[in-house]
Image 1 (cartoon, rainbow, N blue to C red):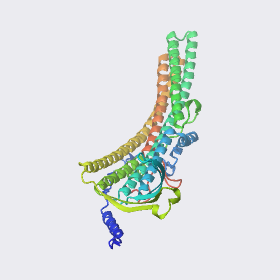
Image 2: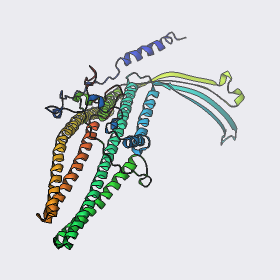
Image 3: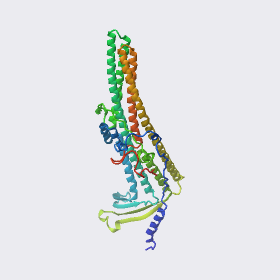
Image 4: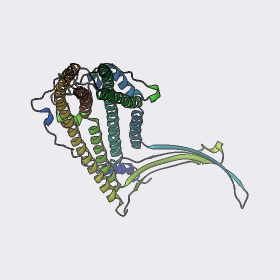
Length: 482
């Protein structure tokens, strides 16, 4: 026996340990994004009027205290097809991780072959039966499999965050559409009241004309005003149908099978506490996705670097080959082979260097995208904080405008009935009062949109009933992630 044979396994193991020490490990610099200590639009004399205990939690739409909206949100989670598609994408990402992890283990194969052949020269017929069992394994000396698994896990984490962001976006779109529909319902009620008021005004002018104290011009003006109000009322029906159809699609139903009856109540506008900017890095799902994509790109650099190292493959095969099945498992028919194989690329025309450079550039791209996403998130929060604050002040001013317009309308109507003012004064006052009330409802819809937009910009609701979803985190929990 060759005395060197027993030393080969030891030599191979030592070589594997030595080569494993050189495993590719790409640098993982923390992706730091400077964020301010507070929001500019959250400073000053203005403070949210709503207590933190009333801030949005997991089901953030409950701050609007509308059971119909809550029921619709549940249908979005169950039946929306865009959400179902993104869920399938996440499941694909999870399966890709399992595929990458499979490379940790050896591949085992089995085969069986039976042939019957006749030679052309002699005419002899021969039989052959072959069964075999083989195994091959490529040890992860350079960390390639490990890095591929890390990249897959990061990609799956990004897909999970994208799924959460898709759900948040759909929930926000539904809330905005629903609240706009309720605003349109209020505008329709206002338009109906306006039509009724203009109809009464037309009746008054016609009666005055018949009594000889009015003019045909007054009657014509009143009739024109009534027809315009009726036209506006009809036009609102288009907007409502479109909003109802949009909501139907969001909840996964055909528009023809979905109706949303009108109500006489409007939800209150909540005040949303903003917390601190560093919380965005932990709470916004789109930022979590961008950060996970950075981690995946970083791991891909290491995967590309492993191409510089040789590949070690350990393989084994055994089986039996015989002319008849009865002889298949006899000792002379058995065969086996066992041995390692080491292969390396000596020249590739710069392919590996280019692949590493491409991976590094892809990493820098994801870092830039992440930082840009953080800046965009800060902008969105600031915009909606400003909208929430300014529109609240504007709503108070608009309420005074409505009150003043209604007083002016009453005075104009009384003066006209007393014969001390022309009908033009009434016409102007009615138009002003109607416009003021419509502007008030439009402003209300903008405040709804700002509230939903701020919740979405802050990352939606999270936590349980005992943990605030928006606002200060527990001590030490607002650290910026690496």
